[in-house]
Length: 262
Image 1 (cartoon, rainbow, N blue to C red):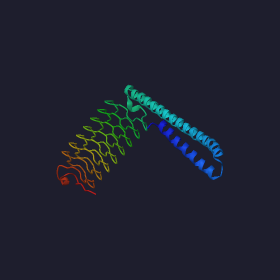
Image 2 (cartoon, helix red, strand yellow):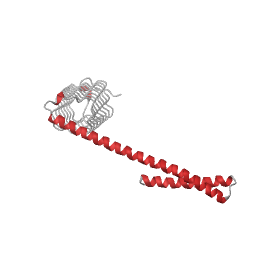
Image 3 (cartoon, rainbow, N blue to C red):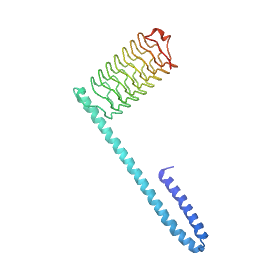
Image 4 (cartoon, rainbow, N blue to C red):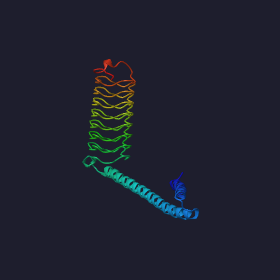
């Protein structure tokens, strides 16, 4: 049911209820039928008018809020398009101030972003496929559901970053810092994670199949329900890591310090 029809229906019910109640009240008070009818109609009309006026104001307020929300979204979209163009045209994007910005949904596919500082920015749903983010700072960034397929993130700082449901398939994260990062349900198939620091990182439900974790530091990491099928774990530190229900190829005892489920 549309909002305007719903309001009209509710008003009709209220009007009928008010009329019935007032009629009963005035009859109980001892007023004659004709007099009670006149007074009831007058009182019901005043109350109904007040209710209608309130409903109209409410609907107008809702319309204004929708228009304001639409205008805000359009302005944000225009700002993101302008920022995307600025990054694309700037000869050295690393010189731009990109800290703490709302860049959700932005398309930076295949862009050269080496050494750029994106700390605390919101890049949720962003497209960064094959982008070069070598040495970039993405600490405390929001990258939920972002697409980073085949992106270069070697030596990047992703400390405390949030990458829930992000796609990092075939991504190069060699020597990157992902300490305390949240990679819950992230897709990291075939990713290069050689010597990557992931101390206390959350990788619950992540797909790390065929990933290269040689020499990675996963001390205290949460790998519950993670898929590590065919992953390379030579020299990886899995001490105090949570591996409950993780999908593994074999015994972890031969890899680093071994894993422990909590």
